[in-house]
Image (cartoon, rainbow, N blue to C red; front, side):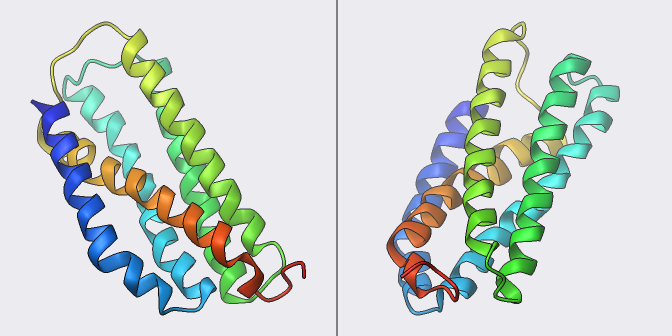
Length: 162
């Protein structure tokens, strides 16, 4: 059931992104557009709840939990650093944004691998279900939007290469 819920959420977010978010991003300066997308990633620290869920009976190994937590915390820190760099028009701003994209993609692949390699378990419940069904897909849908902004509008950023 959780996978179906995730799929429905991804489709809903994709429609929202296509109809509302993408047009809004086009009308914003690049730094503002990227910052709006990065704020979603800052809250990836919610993965810390995994330790609580683990104690509440969510069946995940400690090694898998640590890998997920480290990946998401790294994404959150990179997102916050990117926002600060964009806010102050620092040269490293776009590089940090690309690092957020790369780290998030690797984190997603690692999480998928962990999900497949760990023993089968029941769907998550409670807060963890909400994180999986609503927050995870939001992160996933934000990535192509970030790549689109970075790839098509890079020259608009202060200090970008001519």
